[in-house]
Length: 182
Image 1 (tube, one colour):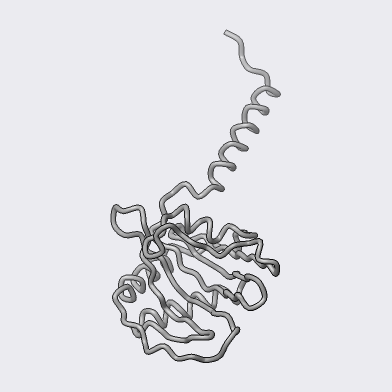
Image 2 (cartoon, rainbow, N blue to C red; image 1 turned 135 degrees about the vertical axis):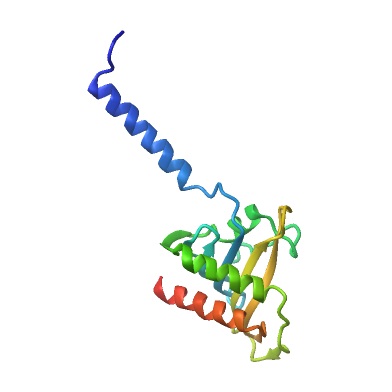
């Protein structure tokens, strides 16, 4: 029986590490939620940028800008129940990871989501025109279904309104604090 040489072991280890790194950087796990704080405007082409957190605690920044409208707005097949792949596509413009969230904070986020999911929305108020919109919102996985249900937390722009639960206000403040750290 022959013993592998040190150089062949090193090559094998390098290939293995590269494969593990490639697989682990891709979103393979099903995320139970996505929460974002983003800005969208159509006044001069299309702009969409912001920060989001997934259920694994990864924080990402993303952004797209297209003055000539070559980048199209996100349009899932079922707007009221987008899939994980559609949500990933929404954020897949200049996306890069900017941080991680600890387990205790993720537990708190899930509590806020449970409380905010059935919250009512305040009356919509028109605030202007062509201001765009700053949105704090989350998407939660609907049981065993492939889709995610939207929870609007706070929208501020041409039209402004909020989810009236205290949990939504806390979640909005937390999402806005992440956006300031990126």
